[in-house]
Amino acid sequence: MTQEQWGALRQELLKTVGQNNFKTWIDPIEFSELDSGVATFHVPTNFVGNYVSQNYGDLILHQMTRSGHDVQRISFEVAANTASRPTLPSTGAPVAVANSTPTETRELAMTGAPLDGRFTFESFVVGKPNELANAAARRVAEGGPVTFNPLFLYGGVGLGKTHLMHAIAWELQSRRPDLNVLYLSAEQFMYRFVQALRDRKMMDFKELFRSVDVLMVDDVQFIAGKDSTQEEFFHTFNALVDQNKQIIISADRAPGEIKDLEDRIKSRLQCGLVVDLHPTDYELRLGILQTKVDSYRAQYPDLQLADGVLEFLAHRISTNVRVLEGALTRLFAFASLVGREITMELTQDCLSDVLRASERKISVEEIQRKVAEHYNIRLSDMIGPKRVRTFARPRQIAMYLCKQLTSRSLPEIGRRFGGRDHTTVMHGVKRVEELRTADAQISDDLELLRRALEA
Image (cartoon, rainbow, N blue to C red; front, top):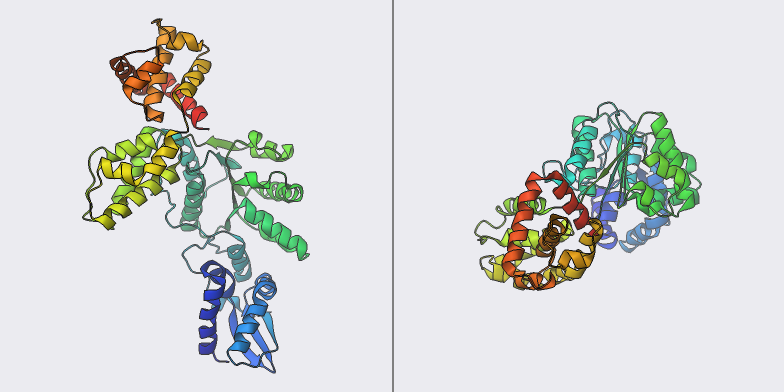
């Protein structure tokens, strides 16, 4: 079989196994020779050869036989010189390793997860809710001396944890190509661990994960309750810290709040810098939308965007940045297909399901109850006629949150607050908006209340 024939056969394998599996497992192997019914392939490592043999060996053998070649079995051999062979494609390569052997480089690339080229520090919109997380991530990405270990990023869905993790990896890859940087999800760590147990290659697994300079594990909450995986993660963590290697972890909640996570792991995760990515505020959401629109200008140069649309979306879709960006993507695609300007009417028609889903999460009654609990006052006093500051300020804050987090009209909000006029609601909302920028305590209270309501 010639190299051209193997190239044609590779295209058939691509159609069968899919782009991701092909790029990860089939692309690195090279056809060597076909002799006496044995097809020999060169692989970068034994790990790759064993995996391809177990998972794709029969498929490759079937494709070769179907193509008319006399093949009884296939064999995988580690090439004597892997440095001369091409590496993984640069798009999605998770590591940049200069001080390791080619075999170690390939092992790390096979073990890690691909990086998304969109997730860089340049594309990360910074606001008050994520300011500290961004600063901490940039400090780690400089690749200097380890100042806090681990860096633990946590927050709800769609707040930017994964974006920052990818951005750190890209920046380290650029600044310090001499470092072994490994990024993967907790699920992938668990999968590699189970596979090493099954194949009796735990020493290879331990050596691989202890050889990195920077270990990045995304969504660590997924190893909670997996006793054996937690045990190995604990030992890997300790080994890297003892070597003064940087560890970066993300999760959807603080270490102490992850259920079924061993106490000794919680303790170690809390010994570094723990940073909370707060739910986005209106200004940050608006900034994200404006950045997204700027990136769309090249793709949709003739598309017109009416005033107020971005502000409307920033107000109405408040829980998840992914939903917010997805809504804008759908809106631009729909408007370009029908050839219309993006107006408020088109926005409401096109995104009716998203807007309904976002509005039914929080009720006026729930906001009133949360605000009353936060300020330790009775609900009846907050919505009652008393105008003393102790009750008036929480009442205005509750009105402001009702305006921001629900689709209720001002007259309807006024009726829910003891039958007040809509102008009273307008005054309260305006007053709180002024206080947000002037009073740090009010700003913090609003963020805490928003988080509690959107949880």
